[in-house]
Length: 305
Length: 282
Image (cartoon, rainbow over all chains, first blue to last red):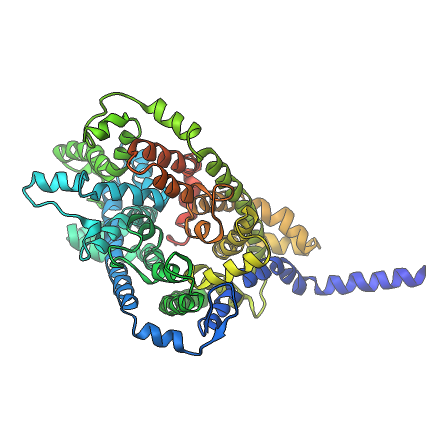
């Protein structure tokens, strides 16, 4: 009896002494385990898998760097890579476009809150639906784009069927929700802009572009940073729109790495898991450059606190 | 433009601005307005090439009724709810805990664990695709709602942890210190002190994750197939195959598929925007 209470006291005091060190680990355990299992380990598995030739069912065969060598000679890979660069560059247009709309809506008039939320609407809708709608817009036989082109005397075009225009056409569809996203980031940022600085700038004779560039934009830095992060990640992740609008076509002209990988590994074109993994690794390394930069920026900010 | 409040501008600019607002909105939402009009048109309008004109008759009820009775849409919708709701609960619950641990306690690995979650959340899906699909197959969860939910919870925990940890960081730390001086157990601090303060963050994350998961297409295609387990995003594309050129039904279906997150957004707008813009203002 006495023995038992002594151990109990010892145990409770041990727990008592160490609970501040142990509690965070108990709280972290489920989240970390889950995340390691489903996100972190699979990354390494993909790296490993990219060294194998595997159809997803039978025995995987070790082929070393062969998949990468094949990628080096693969034209479709370069088309995808080129389109990824186009996505990255053109998608960034969402940032100034979002800023422009945010400035336009940043007034206090009757009903402006409803306007702001309606402008945000495209972001809430699934990209699958966005893709379908824009496909109808671009349709060569009945699309409204050609109706409009005809109205100003231009020849009709088949945007999604034209190798030179297809990627741009899809990006325009993607810019629609992405601009809405950037807009909302800037609207919130504008709320925090310091009115005194604006007054001071005005006294110094700044207005229009100068006011925007020297007074407003610097104060929107945090919003711009987040807008960059989400836009770049969004551009590199683009998959839904391509899959819905063109399925990579015509003749693979609208593929990007994320889509090509899926096509190689999991579609009627084949079940080449290892080759797909190699493409995924390349995409991952490109993304990693950005992720490292983002983390580095966050780290600097944490240190500055 | 912005720095000048509209009240301080000339009368004519004020009037112009008021007129520009609805015009700009209509232009901006033109794609949606088009689908909405498509969805109430009779089939005959498309056969007669009346694509972009006014509907010749209002067939909204017929079209929407057909989506619910003549297609698999109800099942897809149900699947979407079955996938989305548990994911929201699971990811938010897990990240309340991880966020608490990373936001309150100082220990050496703290920032590295935090960065692991942040980095993982930015990773391209394709690097996970083959192993996760294989894992799901091996666990016998391929083509099940459970399989999709488990992965979504795990992946979303990355973003949610980032969010929760930053939110908890901004709470007044004196509250926790005061509780510790009182000798309150650490888990009770979580449950009785921190968790009640996290309500706005929980609301914000819930709507956001709801929208993200509802709109997910990639994992739905990778981890499921067929009507029994696929969500509406995947459903609508097979709908597309089934009803090719039945634009009125496709439109009605798309609107039905898009409605739940839209409703969610309008009900919880403040939280939604607070969630998206966390960190955009300092």
